[in-house]
Image (cartoon, rainbow, N blue to C red):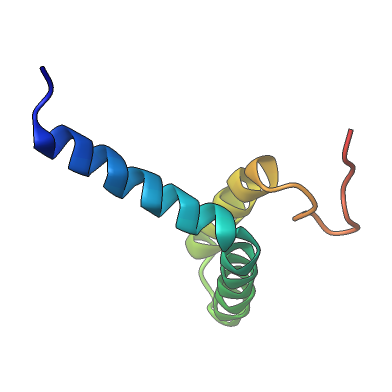
Length: 76
């Protein structure tokens, strides 16, 4: 028989997931804003290493979040 802490953990994870689902638009907007600020900072620095790191992050996000690419994107 599962103990009470298992059910509390499950309930807590459910509440967290509900919060994420309710606020996903705001979370995506915050993430896009952070990427925009990071892009400005990266473009102001002379090194290419930070440019490549930001590009990798943007590639991962464009694969996960639809319409994050310049020019929109497509929903199928």
